[in-house]
Image (cartoon, rainbow, N blue to C red; front, side, top):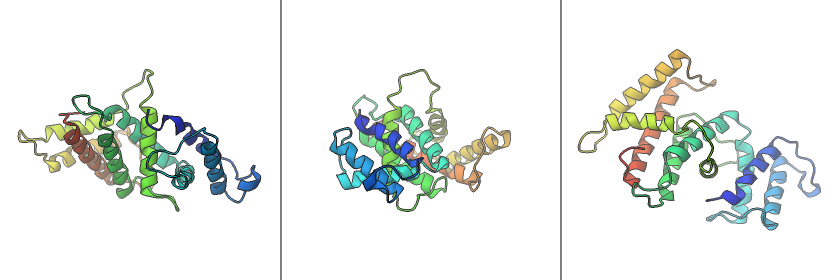
Length: 230
């Protein structure tokens, strides 16, 4: 599985993020230094490997960024929901079963961009959107390996897709005004019924816009993979 060998590092970094930065003589100047040393040692001893497309410097910076991301409960909640849903509803394969990792990666990247743009999450100082997308992709790969009994986490994405399918003409054109209206009604009903509760600073409008942006990412995924629905 992609990144399976070093997924455990994410958990270790999460643990490090919760502890004060003391313990290693050469790594006590800051929490960032402690995480950097941990990742460096994990790679040098063969416990982890640098992912394709990264060098050791990038990977250490990624470890530091992860330690910052996981300290924000809202960011963790959004990423966990997005990653588990994408792993279930947007598998890395075309309609004919041909592997297509890029299709899933592009959909996840688009949804992370939407979450940032629509105000659901913000980047901590010293981190980048690319690092957040990398974490979302790594989490998706890890969560997709779960073979236990569970409620389909992709249900939310499939619900959004149902609005896209309903608003798609016989020629394949999507009426995005219709999609937006349907999604807005859904969000408003969930809020009114108490089934959805929003953290301070996030409005129903933020959620609606993110849901529409996510629906657009789903539609692009379907075009890429040749699927009629997810």
